[in-house]
Length: 174
Image (cartoon, rainbow, N blue to C red):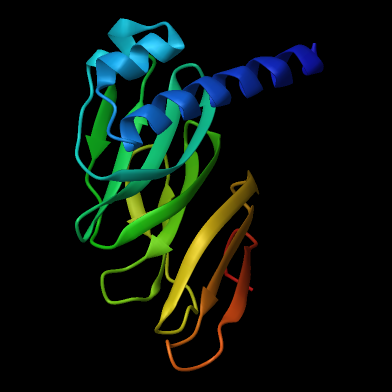
């Protein structure tokens, strides 16, 4: 049973990724739907910008993140349609989710500081971190609401780049 659930989840994530790749590459939503075989699902959403990451926990819960201009781009799939969700300025590069009430998105603010946002089932909120100026987060992995890993880099154009790795323990970043 567990293997079947894992296989189903993998197929759903792959299908969502293929759909989003079509949208991110400038393919019309209808053409992207033709790739995945669902015209109704893709035809309901269109936006400008670039999507960089996707995470799904079920056939009715998926998040995609990216940016449009200097504004982050967060979109949610509810099983029927994609809808854009308000978010702060900057860019998002990665997203991870463990349930409908727990998701994380990472990137960089408009003033070049690592950005971490958390979905609690109702709203996205920015989570403070010890990221220095000139940092960016590129990836996130979540095991649960109390175990999250974020990776990125910091450094100016003149100096060496340093790797950033942070772990959320449910209360603080370490």
